[in-house]
Image (cartoon, helix red, strand yellow):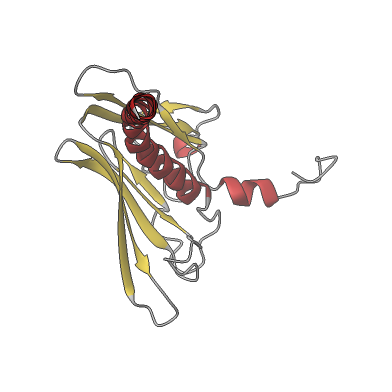
Length: 187
């Protein structure tokens, strides 16, 4: 009986230590999954916007970015553009999506926390802004019809931990589907 008790105590102790190691990782996994969801939302932006081409598809400053995208994920209906806004809310980096849930146009709002305890948030945009000849990095993006090639999101954790920048590629899906006459094979 004593031998069984010792073996059982060791097994339970080992299980407890393994659980203590994995709990912090599972909390971080939630934020990594939220960042991946945001990346898919940005990549789903349409290149051509039929309903309202006069309004910009993306408007960005150094502290906030808003864009329209098509989301087909079972929660949002992809027939109507969904508006996504990234901003700081109570020391958290948040992505808020506002769209419709079905063809009956039922409103749907979903918020993702990309990082808790964030500070010093900044956005930068790479591309040709205002029809400039060469692409460059810009602190804001207000171009009406053009989308930036990249959006870089940088922030720091409150504890001083470095966080790698999050880079988004707007309209990546539509860009990969386009074919030009100079392409040997389709993109």
